[in-house]
Length: 341
Ligand SMILES: NC(=O)c1ccc[n+]([C@@H]2O[C@H](COP(=O)([O-])OP(=O)(O)OC[C@H]3O[C@@H](n4cnc5c(N)ncnc54)[C@H](OP(=O)(O)O)[C@@H]3O)[C@@H](O)[C@H]2O)c1
Image (cartoon, rainbow, N blue to C red):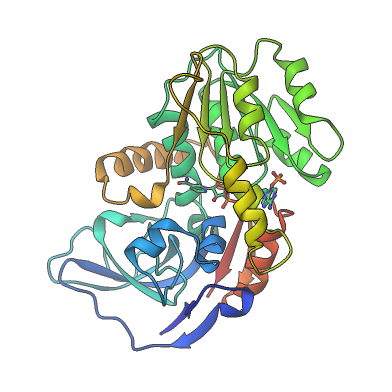
């Protein structure tokens, strides 16, 4: 088998394609011959050595990859629910950047009829993130007005669609003009293009009393201003911090990182003023099977009913993983990037 291994923190050249012995599933595992792999911004942070759960659960070397699709290749003697040759997609706490993987059956799902293997590989991580943020962490009401940052990206595309099926008005924020149309198609009620508009006056004009919910993975650039803009009783869902990370360079700018860290807003009960801040990282939640199953059951049902769509994918050859990281890091991509084996 082949897998992509990172031996130490660094730039795109740290993504090494290596030959390793083929896997044999444990008695409770299913082995999948991987066809496609979803790339997440988190994988870029793992490559930089800054991803908390990767450091805590694995260290170096590490094979990133939270999601994959493919064909069942072998079944452990006690594993149930799947057949050899069946098309599946699934989740894994790392190790997805490979030509094969062994996982427990409860991390695997049959491929729905209306999804290709490439789309399936890009489905679970962003939709589960959006589902957890919107439907498991806060109670939203149909009258709520939500701001969705990076609205044409992976998680942003999922959030816009879930807000649409819950009937919540959204202002999607995008960083460049080529993303405006995509955000509209995904259901954004309004789209704010940060490259041509001043963000905060635009939000103030749309929502004079402030937005009720903000989904923010920008961190540094917008967390404090978003907090200040929230309506009374509003909720800030902070789930990332990409604006203190580099867009072009493969290497971390540690000065920018340190300044971003120092300038990050600090929250305590004396300055909350009837607003809430909620943070989470899904990679620490893989053992919360009840939450995971609830999310995947609803998401697959909505997908099969046509209420949500697979996220649009851009495919890359397995060997072009460095280019895929470079493109995702640039901030110019839309939807999901997927490696094809
Ligand atoms: N907490 C969790 O459990 C969890 C789970 C999944 C994802 N996330 C986070 O959610 C965010 C989105 O992840 P994704 O995989 O779906 O990626 P994505 O949204 O497809 O791509 C990231 C987007 O963020 C913006 N961006 C990237 N780098 C930037 C920079 N240096 N400065 C300013 N803007 C930048 C760009 O959009 P615009 O320019 O249009 O804003 C870019 O398209 C990431 O921050 C990721 O770490 C968190």
